[in-house]
Length: 167
Image: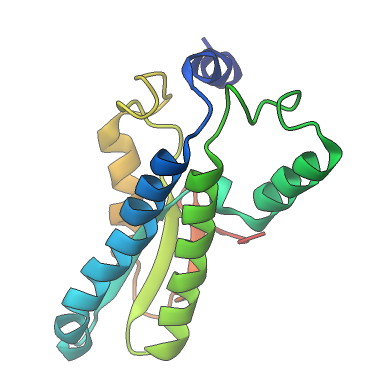
């Protein structure tokens, strides 16, 4: 199966998101990440080359959020595949907020290198193992961004090992 076929199959297995599931998603993806960063921030700031790489998603790009809102307003959410079988709005919002937080951190702490990376469509429990990449391949993208040489940007978003726009 190609990626589009895998995504369509995955969407068939997803259910409408509940309020509790949405809150849990935000607690884990955004608030949990933020708490871990706050706990380690003093150590990172004392380092000569502190780095933070947050795991993001293409769904965390502002254009996806704008498309979702447009579909909500137009009453086409289900027809466009957001619900009942589609991507979690809370997941999207959690990644948008994580991207924004990463950029805020990068500006607030210029001595650190803070970036976001989209792993790609990885075979995990979350994708019901329909992903195109192995966990090792997805993880290697985080490592690649973490090990970027001095002089590379901070407050950036990376996709397929290349800097990409947040929008």
